[in-house]
Image (tube, rainbow, N blue to C red):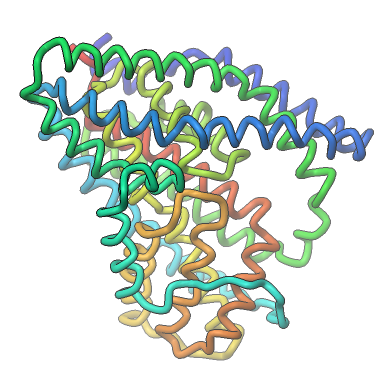
Length: 401
């Protein structure tokens, strides 16, 4: 398969069809038998837990194996992918500013009992990132610290490049074995998503979102524009080819699963499997996909920016363009430090609110609003983040020769 064909030919949709059936079945069950739907939520929880369990080991072994058996193309591919991650995240934040100015939104800010300890400044966010870099490898695996896992995977991979051929071959065999386990887990996605859809609809429903229709419209509208216009533009600038085949494939096969798992970290195995089916360069995607789950956070940047500006508008604050651009930069940097779990970006809203002198207790009320709408906001955010990892990787890394 040629690199050009990657941009034209989508991957097999059999799994996607089964997932669609699972979604439909979950909706029907939630409407007809809510109690039964709550019970099958266990299937969804087991699926998400299985993904979270396998993802840290998968990332460590795949990154180490890819670098230990590294080809010369790897470094040339990683630089533009990282650049696309950072540019895409900042561009998403800027778009969110424009959308917030075009559609100003007010929030119903009330007291809340949510007990959260968000970062108190950008320095603390960067400090936390540095501490994660030097985490104990076993603790990183146990806690799902993918930044620390990446560091250890890179370190092991680079030091094992000069190991005996038998050692590198054994590492490659271990990588293959873990990948096989991941394939089995991914084949359970239809059952898992069936449980997630049924349980979530039966538990929360959509009626609770009616009062937040406008803020949801701005958030999800911004994410759709990034997914369908901004990301394709970035890919076209890089490849000068029609970007929509790979964009739509990533949204269908990565975005759908991420929408329901609501975890970029949990979706790493799904993205790695998709990259393999697309025939991308393994040395590249084995590193770029877990890295993207850590720093490619366009959806998180949108959430932080839109909710912060909504709070400022609610309080009657005037926001000029330079301040908005500064907010975009802070939101992009903060988003890169958002954890790869559900709701991670919401914890960084008080940080951006501090730019406008918004008191922390008011900022925490904005976080509470975020949790109320997270049934759709966080799902759409994760779908955008995770699918973009595949889109940008495919734009740079062609199929293995």
